[in-house]
Structures are given as structure tokens and as C-alpha cells.
Length: 234
Image 1: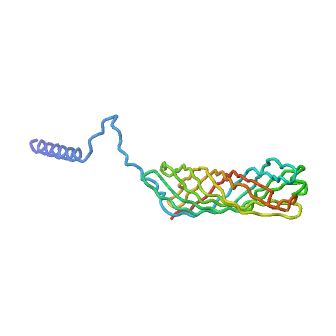
Image 2 (image 1 turned 180 degrees about the vertical axis):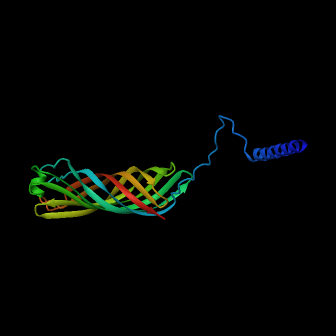
Image 3 (image 1 turned 90 degrees about the vertical axis):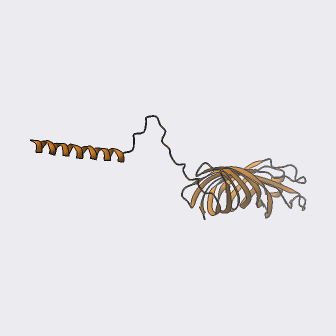
């Protein structure tokens, strides 16, 4: 009997020691309502060079006027598709991202008006304006929300303006300004995608007018560009 009591006492003592050791290993329960600490997510790194492609659609306005041709064409619409590429560099300080970007685009933007006066004299009954390429060199500034970067942009624009006339066509390369904005999204560490709007003003191209034989035919051109792009960063 005494032996049985001693055995039971030993087992009880062993169980008590095991329970104490288990309780020491288990972390105390967190009181309800205590906030759980989470380490901040790492900030997306926008620094560095990038190279990419873009494509989209352009629409704008043009007109023809010649004081020797008996009136102007009035303003008419131009539109068409575009595709091109861009290269740039970003500097990031905190959430602020400042960059430089240059792009070149092949375009098929055109439009025309038909009436008397300048169109009949210079265009054989039609005033037709075409653009086959344009480019921009711009500053960008944005504020990063993780891998989302809304930004505004502006700078230099350049491109061609072509006046198609009855006796042939004339082409001029113009420089002007551009401004706009967009949103770029980091897809992975190296790849980003963007959507962008730009307004381009290439000023007024001047061509030789058929009515006077001198440079009196004026063709102003403005464009609105909507495009999407994909960049590779390194």
C-alpha cells in the first residue's frame, strides 16, 4: 500500500513538473483589443534608367489660311494612330519622383476640309494636313503610393506638318511645347506599365502658297495624345 502511494506521488510530481515546463514555454495570451504590429511594407524603388514602347491614338485641330487666296479653310479635325518608344531616368527622394523622358513616335494623323478660297487655290478643292511623326523631351514629377506613381509632365515637342496640295505636297518640321499627365504602375521589380495624356502644340507651319508663289500659306497644328506604354527598368 505504501509502495502504491509512493508511486502515485511520484507520477503526480512528474506531471506537475511537466506542466510547469510546458507553461513556461507557452507565450502568455494577448489581451483582446491589443493591436497587432505589422512591419511597414518596403517602398517601391523608382530610381534608375528605363526603356519602353508605347502606342495609342491622337486627335487634334488644323486649318489653312493664305491672305492671297481669298479666305481660310476654317478649323478642321485631324486624328489617327501612333506607335513609338521612350527612354528616361528617375530620381526618387522619399515619395517624390523626378524624371526626364524622351520619346519618338511614328504617326498617321490626318484631316481635311473642302471649300472654296484657300482650299480651291492651294489644294485643288481640299485642304489636307498630315503628320507622320512627332517626339517629346519632358520633365516628369510624381508622388509615389507604393508601386503607383501619378505624375504631371511637360516640356519640348517636335514633329512634322505636311500640307497636301493639288500640285504636290510640302513638309515642315516644327518645334513647340507639350504638357500632360499620367499614371505609372510597377508590375514587378523591373517592369512598369503606364497610361498617359499629352497635349502638343507645334505652332504654325508656313508653306509656299499657290496663289502668291511666296511663303504665305499658314497651317497651325495641335494634337491630343492618349497612349499606353510598357517600360523595362534597370
